[in-house]
Length: 284
Ligand code: G1P
Image 1 (tube, rainbow, N blue to C red):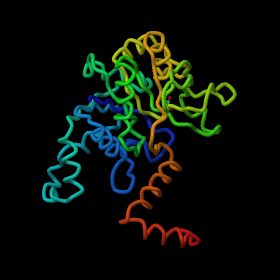
Image 2 (cartoon, helix red, strand yellow):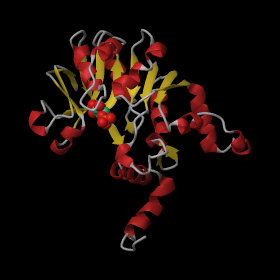
Image 3 (spheres, rainbow, N blue to C red):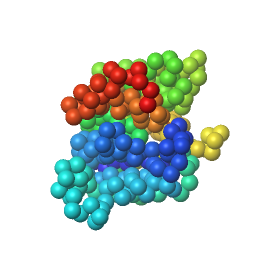
Image 4 (cartoon, rainbow, N blue to C red):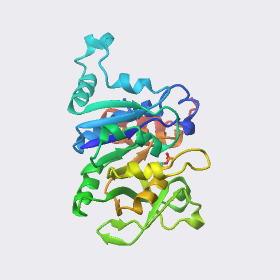
């Protein structure tokens, strides 16, 4: 499976931490978010991964490369695990020259993807799913005849509707909707449903033509949701309310939540964290 991971976003929701460091390199416990995303892609069967980067994102390339200065520590389990990951899939890097939106970023991977259907995972979100999320999407893709794009959806509370792309349509199979309406970050009153696009997609290559037809929004960015509206005029799109959990790490609050939840689930960190939280009356 070919997978594209857009990681060119500026991280404005996490400044100043992300001024010179990619938001995808923020750690959740001891691993940067991008490593979880690549692990998730590989678990779903990805053997060819394109990470789309931009200015100030070179650390992403270095992370998946060998570091000669650490050669003596190459046997450390954490480094060995990373090395094995980088060998399971070919990882390519493409640079988006200016931040012109998620759809424009995807377009920079077009030559590499060619005429294949492909998975997309956003570089700042971790999905913990069994089976892995892209596998779930690929199953729906095959079940629906192998000619339609599939969006991962989750039901969000009212106050979060305006932060996401929203997809709506009738349910046609278990957890699966036939997408008839798509709106990027609608106001609550205008939202056609509460099913939000979580940042994982399985797309047909027709999406590239649809992106080219899509004008930029008021901020000069070409939104993937807008391009999917164009795609919907050519091909069917389905949405899957996926099984599993998503952790967005793009703001300090969400990143902190991900760290606390992952630490509480990990015997190596759990007890110490509980001790610290129990003693939270003492200021730092
Ligand atoms: C992007 C997409 C949006 C989707 C969201 C998921 O928005 O445009 O449709 O719901 O990712 O995180 P962003 O978060 O980049 O503003």
